[in-house]
Amino acid sequence: MKTTKTLPTGGLGSRPPAPRKPAAKFKTGKTKSGRTVHTYKDGRRVVLPASKPDKTTPPPTTGPTKGEPLDPYAASVEAATRVKFDPARSALDSAQRAEKAQAPQIDAWYDRYRGAVEQATTQNAAASAQAQATLSGLQNAAATNDRAGQAQIGEQMSKDAAARGAAVDPQVLAQLQQGSQVRASNLAGSQAVLAGQGVQQGAVDRQKGVAGEGTRVASLLENAGRVRELLGKKTALARDEGDYAVTARQDLISADGRARLEEFLATGKLGVETAKANQPNKYGYTPSQWNKLTPKQRRGVQVAYEGDVAGATRPPAKPAPTTPNQYGYTPNEWNAMTTPQRQAAIRKFKEDTRAPGKPPAKVKPTRGPGSLTPAAEGKLTSQVPLIVEALNKGRTPDETAAKGPFSPEINRTLVRAAMDVRAYGGVTPATVARLHNIGVRVRGNFRTVTRAQALERQRVLREAGGVLRPG
Image (cartoon, rainbow, N blue to C red):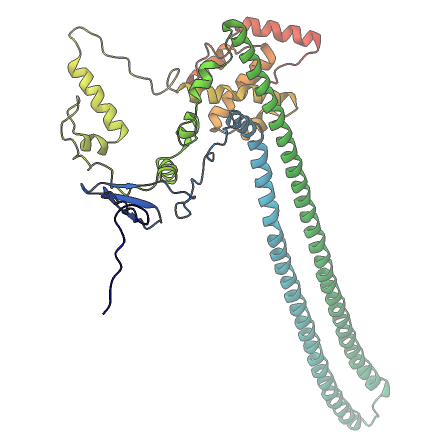
């Protein structure tokens, strides 16, 4: 009989009761990406952050990485470098493309030339052979006719002499034979001359082909030399661009340091507000860095930091509002409108709701002063010092206008303004009118001079041997 051993419930040798596990408030599972997820009884799901970087979600492709400081001078240095070196780089690229396109054109031209020379050689040889054959035929026909004529004349003379009872004079027959020989000799000489001319023309044609090949090689070598020269210029331009970027960055750093020192001397604080404004958020990005990311990149950063909740903890989407705005359009209608249509609706609303007697709002002009935005106007006026620098280096006004980044009318007007500033220290009334036509306001951007002041300055500079305005 099998017996079972019973342990005492108390005292020595007793086993303490096993602790009971508390009832779980949620169930634990895994998402497709391998993260831990807690599912509660009320249906809520919470995805825990990944302990390791999630390789399924790619990091943002652009913008600073997490915790990387943003270079505050990069945009300014890049803009200044592009304004200074982009025209020269574009010109070199255009010239290089043109020179590279010349090589196949040179080959194609000389191939056509060689074909024309070969065709002319064949035609000349055929014409020479045909002429010789024609002369040979004429020579044979003349000889046959001479022999027949001599025989007929000799027979007739013999009959005449027999009738008279006299003999035929041998000299007469000799003269006839001599004439026939002279004609045959002339034809043979002409044939020989034609043959010699054909041989000489063939040699000349072959020499043309040899000279054409030599010229082809020389042209290709010259084209390759120009391409190498342009490559050297591009290398030198890239080196100058790098040096300029370093210098511009140092200038910006120096200017920023002076501004911080002035702020410290004036307030006794060194960038306290700036430091507070640049505090990174929980994802490790400063406000300026976060603003540079696209919505898709921000979502990628949030997913990498918090985990993809897959809409579990996200509240349900609210229905699109249908209440019209102050202009009488629903959000869907307003979003479907273009910017000009929205502006027209806003203007109509303001006209309808304007108080009686109140004048209408000023409409922004489409041409002339005030028609450009401050940014567009600044982009135009910033070109004038660069044009003055180019003129001082010896570039002609026409060349500078042709290489400008804007339309021909704007480029010519900016060159004229630069020439006035360079010659008179300000712009003349005629140039003021031209600047107003392209939308640039002179006040605040340029110093104006009257015509009398310009002529006086020109006279003084002429007497002093200074720089005068061309033409």
